[in-house]
Image (tube, rainbow, N blue to C red; front, side, top):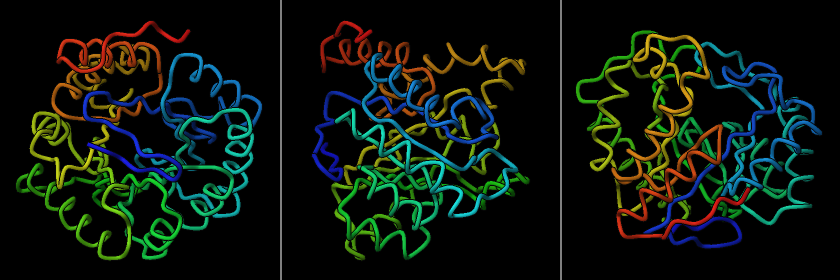
Length: 285
């Protein structure tokens, strides 16, 4: 299983990746305002690099349920300087978490390798940009939009419907010029899904792989964990996130989007050692 990004092709057959979340927003559900200053964002990125992160995912607009949209110019102003500064000192993978083609274009010009679009590249201009730049692509499933996605979402069979969406996206995007090897799919845990839908998708991960493309899973600190634990405290969601990283890797996910790099990376490497893939490696920190 190979995934092609803007500068390299990565073999994910036996060794998955940790994608570290770097929110440069004032209103993220988990860490809003902590890293919206470029200096603070870079300090956070350096910590993740020291802990062995594979991809740093930079986002300038919150996609939490009910979040208000951010203007294009403001979003670019938030993310482009951080990506430029990060690229100047790190040769690893950088992704831009955005639904806006103009923001993605500015991010790729600043040094991003991957476009992570929670809307699944619904905008034809985003498809054209990704096809033209040769960047890696994460296409996520979301019912509705962030402001409305949690308003009583309904599915007949959520696993079948998400798989159908991936099949449609693969056919549409490759026909439009996006390289098949550049595609990665994300079932969008928590994006237009109830607790039951999220659990069904986690159980059904093996059925979601389409055309041999890698799956990305983002469950870190999400509210469904708190519902299951009957706790509102974000810190209570950290170890369950690590457990889910191990579970989803064994179930076929190759990329894991998390807030805390080191414990999730170590869980990933341990599972892969047991599965007979990559050997355990000493933590980078």
